[in-house]
Image (cartoon, rainbow, N blue to C red):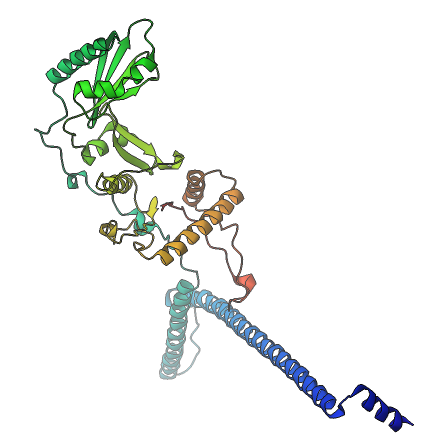
Length: 436
């Protein structure tokens, strides 16, 4: 009956029992292969874990053996110190009645035995002293010690201004130009008087006092007419000057004055700045040195046409950092896409890495900087400080008291050959400012 049922099912459903058995066999072999690979992976992982545990056990045994030998050597050292030649107590021996020659021979033999014991204990003492000297761990070397000894460059390396250099307009030309400006404004129906003149390296500002009832917008609308009448390239009107009731009219100099970096770096403004991230930006329109603290600066945009001096300005900022801080205080990460602008800084101790010219390396460098920034945030949060200067101050104070701080965010390496309990957190050191 079963045979007829299967035969009828085969004819009705057109089922091939051979193909069905073939597919079942293929599925079985496939599942068996997957199970075999999973078992092989599990077995390999088990062997790897066993090998790692064996290495850790061997390293732990070696450490325990070293500690035991150090303790034994210390005991030998203490015992041998008591048996030195000078520490052997003198004993009074009563000479027995007998032959004098026999007593002399016995004394010589006893003295030889004592000499051997003293020589053996001296060797043990020397061995114990060597072990005692090797047993304490070597003090940690500060990574920034060598960098802190590097001095800043000398100012004699910079070019000094020439004595006969041009500084824009002369005093007589400035007075003549101020009279001409008053006359041209009067021609346009504006009564004004020049109150002060601020000559700068690139432009000169004339501060004028308009007559009562004169609107500033009226002067601003005459910018092109004033430039044409004064025969200059352009004229800029400063409508509001903070702290003054004057209106500023800026006129470009016929000859731009050369601003030397030594003028800014040797000025009192730069020398009195305490921040190691002080940037020398140049001179303002009044000829006064301008410096800025990079740590407190929200942003700085350096823009200009080709050949206008953008690279010169960036080099001046970098040199001002090098003249203000040691490599222990400031480290640089320089990225030079042109491969020609920043290669002169290759090899200086302030560089955290060689000058980066490949954009793939630049992406990796910026990614590392982000990770380092987040790590420093975690460190400062763990120590309860708000900025890098507070962190360095706290670390320095602890180091001066011979109580160095341990890294609070350090985690032991579970895959290390040293046991987790024997791993010690590294001491904290001062961190430099990193400028990218």
